[in-house]
Image 1 (cartoon, rainbow, N blue to C red):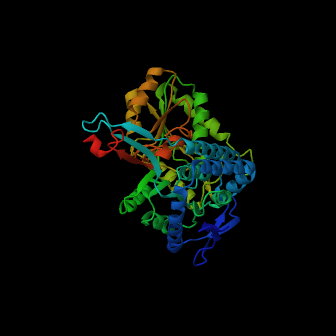
Image 2: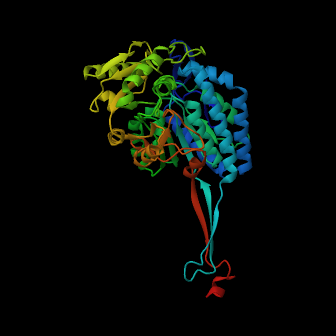
Image 3: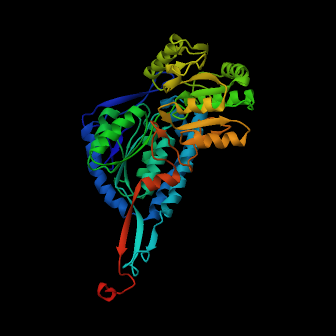
Length: 485
């Protein structure tokens, strides 16, 4: 496939290409241009034309374009799911849910494009301005760069893409270098809509070249990125040079607390799904640290081991597969090293932890201490540490003792415990009786501390991707300044 710059599907300026390989088999799926800085800056220049044209594009046109893209995704859903499974390694069964979410997201933003309301403010609260009035509306920021991760590329891109276009911006997408193909395919649907030329461009390549150039470019007004905390810090620093608006949804080391009134068997099913069979463990909001109240600790451990042993690991195209490969062998080796470090620090590996190419057998740890890396670091793969606790205060303190603060889950039947968790846990969302691996597109999603800034969601993103503009009329009801005097 080729990338879209300036309304044309083109190769990189130096003709360099990247291979996209199936993480499960190693087979070559396709090649894409390996763009460089010159390609990225060309897209920024074309985006200035797109910015002007989009600013004058009526909301109903933006609405219709996004609705048509949603319809195309829905029509081609099974083909897109197969393509994404081949390039990404997640199970096709799970990807169908991601595609369905993207359809809802495009339609949701299409509707919100018609609801960017303003307000009128009488000024008679201010002495001397009794005859004044002000009009405030939301206007597009200009050019938005969307930097998309590999784990849920279609769903996460849908928020950034549909949000930017619904708000009337021009958009440049930097897709994940490991799996850009599905986004390129859907970008073709966008190119066929009635949106202006250069409303959307997509530039393939590695982040260190393409992403960095886009973030530094003076012609970009906002960067919306989902990815690692380290990358987020680098983007924030670079974007500060031109005072860009930055929205960062970053890493997480999400905790789950199981209180003694929880059914161990039901909780175990939720833990295994939320850690192992969601994204093959490669999710920022996956279940990553589990605290189990001591009376049910042994029962939960036994149930988790039974559920883990029943998982089917293999071909993501097989609808009976529960766990597929990690995105690259490098990623799998990193998780393998983290597992080995956990063992060397004294934790007990009671299940899995073996690497075969890009595959890691789901690993379960017990005997984990709070000072161990397997507890403190974000592990982007199928690793589950189980830690006992006694008092509620101990559990809350361990959850908050983290540089991250994305989501946390609490399993209990006690309302007072629920409300205490909601008040005391320093995270963006507290989830009740469900794994942390959940995201609802109509709710604000994001976290505290090293998990990022801002919130992403159908209602919230449009506010971030627009800015307020005010018309101030001091003598609106006086006829003229002279009459007011």
